Length: 113
Image (tube, rainbow, N blue to C red; front, top):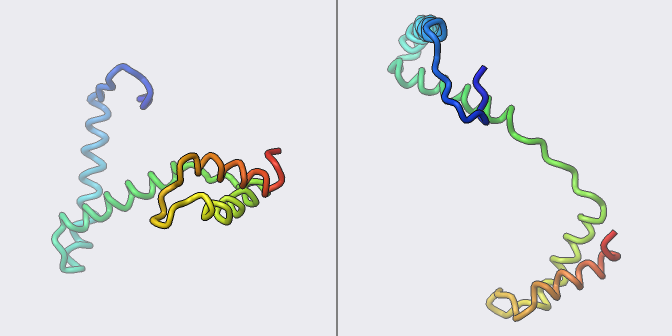
């Protein structure tokens, strides 16, 4: 089976190519009547279906987000609150301001646990 991390190239076998052709023929047989009934060019419907399945696969592979810890939520709020003191009027950081804001936010949030 082909692995995305393998360094060797995957060459499809004749059986793989035959299966791909069968699947393509089956998809065309299903899509052409649907496209005709909808009054759309078959290429548009086919592109939509291929794009939809590609998007669904990508969404399924998306990594699950981790829940932020209670301390992280406190630190985030403290950093937003404190950072204003360490920025210039135009929104840029003062010299050493970011580092000072991080320290102040950790102190305000209850220290790094």
